[in-house]
Image (cartoon, rainbow, N blue to C red; front, side, top):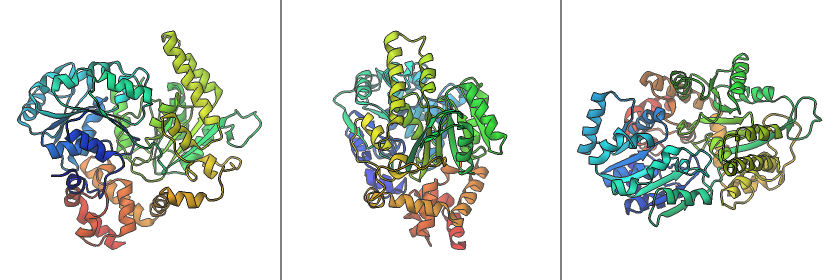
Length: 511
């Protein structure tokens, strides 16, 4: 089987996204690779396809035990043989999985960095691995925005398992990329950097001035009610609201819930059972909005998050890219709104008090850089891409500065390039986004979403594991009438056709 055949016959996609083919080719050739690709660029396919093509097990190092079951379920939903090894397993189940792993029963096995130092590492000793994929690889660098000491123990993976290493991350500066290569002891790796421009994300930022300050374009005096207006305008859609502290998380969640929003709080101070309940409620669309600290989000696979709001300023540009990037992973239009103030900068500076002086100053500098980036009246997509080492043209249609977007409804924001914006958007691929907006507003799309939810609830899986929003929008646009036409819809592979195809065809025929 070729990579192209696997892409079409297993996953139901017509073509590779930028960067995917190069990374997959490196894996198939046994070469180390570090891939910096934006959230939603399809990083998981870069190790899933080699697993199917090579016929040997791929080890996926994943940062959070709580999300491994979702990752395995998502792989199984397209017909991949996958499992995980972690401390949550009962001894008999663990033994069964280890035996299956050594027989070669699995194409994918997920394990946490901590687990590789314990039982999971020993279990893998007898397995034949074709590839080691390290997800969220920026966690290995102390200069990354989410350093995790356990990732430092991954340095010997390549020698230990005698397999090429693929490091994957959505946000890494050139400095962090070099650190990843060094820490993982990679040998002459292929370096792939995809584009960080995601035109389906509509970026906006507002200065928090306080109620007594003089109004100015792009500023708000009442942040809580501004967040409420944003959430109410997107009723029934999934979204995340990030806050600086646990106290503000609980206050914001209570405020939204008291006004009819299905909102839940999430932060590291909650016990494991509470956090799991919130995650499951969000994944299964039982809660629309999660109000959270940055403890929520890493590894979240929900592709239909339609908005991300920063109630308080992100702590760095890289963190902003990572957190805002959790919106619209399915490629459909989504809103990312950031509120910021100098008080937020001071708040982050207070948090660095226990760090060594050099590291503390580095973190303080990143917070100040985030403030300057949001304050600057320049294309927001261009600014974020430049920070990560990519030069792009102004977005023209996907940020408040270029297009005059004002989702909160404050004073009019004058776009940099009001004229020609439509023309440039059509060169840059925003036509599909316009079509998506039209399909998302249609009664047929609403009916398909309801059908999807009923099927997902019956199977006790997240709705996106049936079909994601982008695939439903494609169905609405193409109106397939038979199996051949349905399987031509992007995202409808053979496994999903066999489980859900006829059901959705019937709904489409009914109109």
